[in-house]
Amino acid sequence: MDALTFIRHSLTQAQQRFLATLHGIDDDTLAWRPAPHANAIIEIVWHVARADDRLGRTRTGLAAEVWTRQQWAGRFGLDANASANVEYQFLRGNGLAPKLETTIAYLTAIHTDTLELLGRVSSDDLERVPDPARPQWTIATCFRHMITHKNNHHGQIDFVRGLRQPGWDLPPGTAAAQS
Image (tube, rainbow, N blue to C red; front, side, top):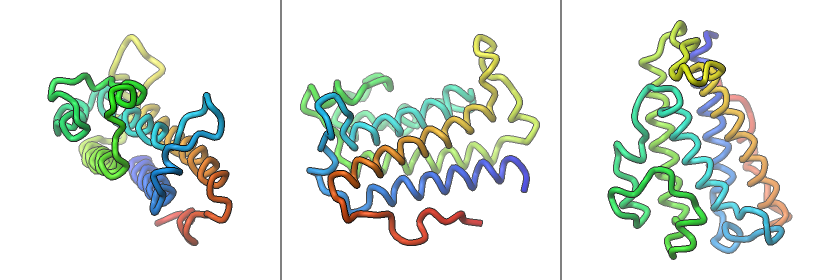
C-alpha cells in the first residue's frame, strides 16, 4: 500500500469511528462535564472540526479552509464574515452553541474535502514544507497529525460518554480496520 492510500484509509477510519461515537448521543450527554474544568463532548467535537479544517488546508497550503470556502459561519448562526478562528467558548457565551447535526455536517464536509485534496497530491508532495517558518511541518506531518489528533479526541469522547452512559460502547466492528 502506498503512503497516500494509507493516509486516505487512516483518515476515513478515524472519521468513521469518531462519528460512530457520536451516533445516538443525547443533548445532556453532549453537554455534560465530568468535572467543572473539563470539556464537554460537544466542545471536543467543535475543536476537532476546526483543527481538521486548519490542518488539512491552511497548514498544508493545499486550499483555503472549508469554513470560508463553503460559508459555514452562517450555518452556525454567525455573521458571514466571522473569523474561522471562532472558539467554542465564544459561541457558547453568545448563546450560539452549535448543534451536533450542524457540527457533524461540517466534519463530513471537511472529510470529503480532505479526500479530494489528497487526490491532487502526489507521493513526492508529501515531503513538501508549505510554510518555511515551520520546516518540521511537511504535508505528510499535517495529515499524520490530523489522524492522531482525531483518534486522541475520539478516545476522550468515548471515555466521557462511557462515564455518563456506563452501558454504552461502539457498535461491533466499528474499530475494525477497513480495507
